[in-house]
Image 1: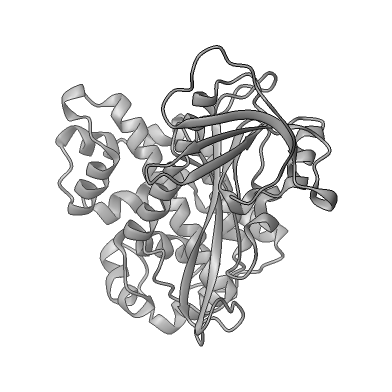
Image 2 (image 1 turned 90 degrees about the horizontal axis):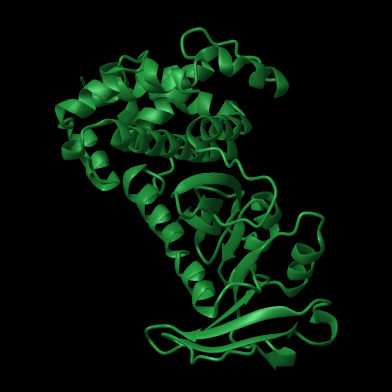
Length: 372
């Protein structure tokens, strides 16, 4: 079975054409094309991400080999420019709902982590005049939330490269998880809102090194700190207009280079070592960004309009969710001797050299729809 054919078949089973029609109606988009429809564009962008095609011209030469309707590159470009990217964002949410493990917990203290961060995709200034970035570059941002212990994509939103991460943060929050984030999300007043909202948002967020601690009180501890932990205290953060209404816990440790890492949290029952371990899991989002950029064509933007750019990016993330689902489910089904790492699964799938058990598993496409 060829890699391209198997992925296209599975994508069509997971999201059949009839599922996009009501979304198009909501978006008030009328697809008048007969030769190359919106659904054809979805399949094209999916294969382009998976096989890392170079652009519309390259895809024009390859799409017929995948069983897709062959059209010229200008048709591809016009369609990508015309279809609202909100469709692909909705389809990503749909795929996440189909593939990710549902969180059953509604009440009680959350234990799973929601790691939030952003990545910027930059190109020359002339490519995206509507999205200036720095110097002679333009760019867009993807803001994502990853379920840390599972490595699953949970929420995504988009902005231009100049927009601060804090502006997108409310779109990514989910009180069912512990929010984990870096310094760019460490605005003191947000901590008050997390603490005071009806369903409290628990968090572990790194603070800037020059943060002021007001009325600090060290937490009592009978045993010496373990590892790189140096301080564990409670305080109000900031001063004057930036002073928080609530007291928060602050854990200070050293990184491997000896630099201070200052963590703010409202998890008062965890040990300081436990707080440090939670923050260390933030690296998983960096691994995610590196993976999608290396394997899903994220840095190579085909079009130059918001619809074309964000449509391509959201479809690439949709393919990531699908691949992660195929891998996770497959590793549960195949014999232990055939189990793979995600990296090996992607590599062998790309080379079309998966072990026989995996080929049988992927060929049994009805499995994916019956689970959902």
